[in-house]
Image 1: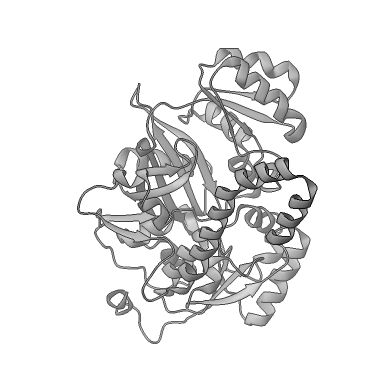
Image 2 (image 1 turned 60 degrees about the vertical axis):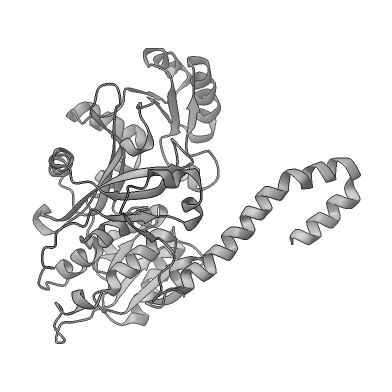
Length: 411
């Protein structure tokens, strides 16, 4: 970090940065920006979020990260800061609210987004699938189910399949699962019929064959005139849960084919700002197929790019403040980012290449509090999950009295 700081002039402006979302993603963005030496405000609803405990963060709590109340909060926060700060969004619902209210917020914060219609198209799985088919972007075969009369279209797909709500806001609100795996036509039809009344629109797609280490991702920032300023290609080494989960381990994986494909898509939609596209290489055909785009915000595993030498949040900050670009650095392919040390002691650790430098998402010697806050809480939740089956047995065996006592203990 000290070597990078030598690049910055003492006379350069240190306009504050605001990071929306205090989860692991926000922690990585906070630490990436901190290399620039600016004041950083991290916003979330819960004091326990790890990024709020970083030594680099000014902790700010709010009641909501979306909707009119969140816009009012952002208005008040900017008045407290006193100048338009740089804005980095890590939360999906916050991003949608900011995009919707951009006319007002662009006067208060420094940020860049594609057109709101593009944001909605990339956010909505059904709309993105339709756009991909229209433009020839590589996606798995799929069927969109908007009414029960669309259900027969599932028969044209090859099992196994994945069934997803088109609008992820239903998942964030707890009204629907993020996805349902379906081993057969019957399973896919049943899942679509069950989800449809809850979410109004469902995307059913063929599963892309292959292990989790066939998943690649391109992270980027696009500035004024839609110039690609920072791009990093990475590769998952393992996911949790396996096959459908979030990144457990990832590393750099230079791939010109994916970078060219990504830039081509971004050019077609006149993209600006933070984003990412996740691909999976089909084990049968060898083709890269798009799994999911990330629009207007940073990604869960964003910090792996910084660790490998491409600090996308700081590239964006310096661009938006008209500061000198960061000097080019070679990508360090030895760096491996892990989402949790708990993954390290599980079977997924076998995926780590030899001679790798593994960096934990939470723990840093110079910034230990996020790990000190997160891991005890995470361990306690793990114990509760482990004990829950036994609690259920005791409740069934001994009845309401034990149930009440156990409930009091949990509170």
